Each structure stands twice: as structure tokens, then as C-alpha cells.
Image 1 (cartoon, rainbow, N blue to C red):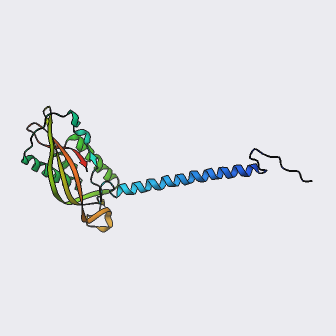
Image 2: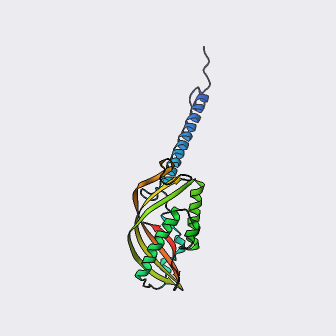
Image 3: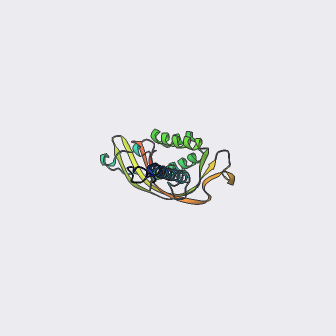
Length: 217
């Protein structure tokens, strides 16, 4: 008469096999979760490097830049009037910033913006350089520019303008000319993209307007 194996807590004669199967299933679940996280991270990085922050764009700074440089609206002072000449100045600053950004020229960016905004753009240019890329923004066309609000805080005056513009916008590897197809990282060097942004400017009363914040719509 064959002796039967003693029962175990699992209710089966082969307790070791059951434990091994359970452990294997757990390891398999951990492996699947790890792979899902890995591919999700790769997908996010690919989206970011291809300009997910702006439809069709490549690397122009952000959906919201230097927002802390503008005062909280609920605490702002009285509304003020801004002349048409000021709106023309805003449009010129927009063109100058785009051109200096495309050339990665931090020195030229220093003139038309506040130190807070300059610090932000410097960080973005440093990031591009560390990744070995340059963001080319060319053929900039301002489609619409409207003053939306203007106010003052103490001796500081603020104005926000709605700017809609079109431009060629793409990333190219450093060391390659903008027209070199082998150097293209992302974006389209032939077809322009459009952007809508709110640019806020600041000046001391009677002084020079400076860019203090950008919010992409």
C-alpha cells in the first residue's frame, strides 16, 4: 500500500509547486507593469521632443513662461490707457525676441525682457544646447495683435497683448545648417505653424517696455 503524502495548507499534495507558481505569477505581473511604465516614459519623451506643447511646433518656449513676473490680477491697481505707439513697440519686441531666440543669442534677449524672463530663456537655451539641438524660428508673420488690458501697480505699469502669429518652427542638430535635411530633429522646415499667445509687458512710468510674461493659449 502506497503511503499518501501529508496534506499541506494549500490543500494539494504539491505545496512547493503551488508556491512556485504563485511567485512566478507575481514576478510576471511586476515585469509587465515595469514594461508599461518604460514605454509610457519613452512615449512622453518622444512627444515632448517633437513639440507636443504646440501644434506642429518644435521647441519655442512654453505654454507659460515667466508668469510670476506679472502681479496677481486681483491686487492690481487702476486701469490705464496705452497708446497705439505702445502696441507697435510690443510687436517689435515680439519680432526681436523671436529672432534672438532662433539665433540662440542670449545677449540680444537681454535688452527687451525682464531679468526673470531672461533667466527662463537662458535655461531653455542651455537645455537645447545640452541636447545638441537648436530651435529655428523663421519667417515670423504677426497675424493679429490686440491690447487686452493695461493697469498699474505703484510706479510700475503693465500691459497684456494678444498676439497671433505664424512661423516656420523646427529643431535642427547643432553643427548642421537649417536647410540640411540630415540635421532635422523635429518640426517642418517648409510648412509654417500658428500660435496664439498673451504677452505681458512692464515698465516704470515713462520708461522702456520690457517683456515680463508669456502665456500660450
